[in-house]
Image (cartoon, rainbow over all chains, first blue to last red):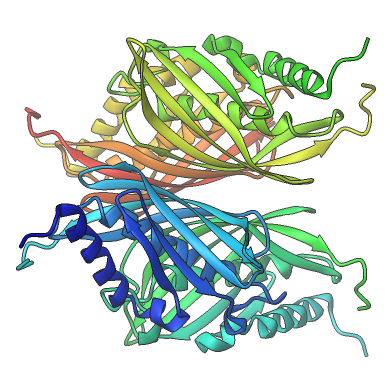
Length: 148
Length: 148
Length: 148
Length: 148
């Protein structure tokens, strides 16, 4: 019984997500994984806010950076890991709501360098509002010792 | 007995820092405040790491965004608050160490828009190593209801 | 006989484009204008290249920054002008081709701050290839002396 | 008679600068080269302006991207070329003046990825004013066919 490459790739994404301790700490969950993109959700947490009671810009960035990085990973070979080189993020509305959804996708998957883009939406009573938009640059790091 | 404007400005920075719940959650402390810049420190926290056990890029961004924003605030009028419009951050070495120091300063303080830059250093046994560098854009938001 | 607001807005965009001397110098043309977005095209120019004979990254940026800025302007009031605060651009493939198309659109139109995104495509024999992608921040500057 | 590595590196920077046709077109000159950084100057050109008669943001970016890229090149091995992956630039004052000076330097020289920062100053009657500030990411591209 063999799995499809797509399924393998999703399994690797889920595995790396699980190893990101900060995701568990934030109570974030991985709600969609495919080569089309990755989605991460988290509930509002008062203990992660800035001075106005909104989610801190850095927390918004954390889930979006992970969504973009994992979207890039889904396009990489099985023995690769992903490293964030840099990102740029614009905050277009306050991060207030009951839930936050980060969606990342790959703009260009290169051998060494991949470019991703993504958005975070604040959700209030089921209505999504764009909170932030990002472009990020990811690097493929080949693990030459990987047994899998 | 009156306080100097400098002291007032530092007091406002300390007040906004205290209201950022995420700083308390991370155990971050405000270790320097002046119009020359703002410094925030935090200890390594395993519960805020990515898959390699390094501090997650978004956590590095969180303390540096706050350091830059508060550096901008120190230049703003007494009834102003500061809002991050956007930032860009490059990660130049893994965020591993026992302590992390974020230092933010103002490149240009404008009436509406301020531009800041800052760095995060990983500290291991007292030795600092550049981990990340940021440029950010902050907006002055005047609170017309402010009583102070 | 009155013009629609849409037409007025397009006329202002065309007027500002005409006043950008660099567009004439580059032989760039404004090929689409609406509140949906702005498109600028230019032919390959050997005198604007970098060391490999590709269009220089800064030239790619120039037409894309203009496309994004004009897209933002199309959403602004009649007495407003647009000012680029900052942008971030990723280069995803070499800018080689016979023609280059910059397409800018508004992600969020705010009263003071607008966020735009855009792409440049290299065109070879009619086939478009993504060359660069940008997020930019624009500021609305009200001209209080404007007679129109 | 042998040249020092430093001199070799400067010669390569000067050679690549000469091959950037756009620099000649803009009348830009390379006024300083060392591993400490690279400086490029150009005079005000009305044919490269935006709607207010200031140098277009993209032209400011062009000379600064070259200054940063060449600063990175100065740290690379002899058979390497430099490729701009991305940059982010903030415009802090209008690009008006008689002369413009772009200064780029390396923040972190890596084997594959280098991070640079730089500034453009507008000069009026000898007085420099900060016009723009950039962070850029450069990639080392090894030319395996290089004879030198």
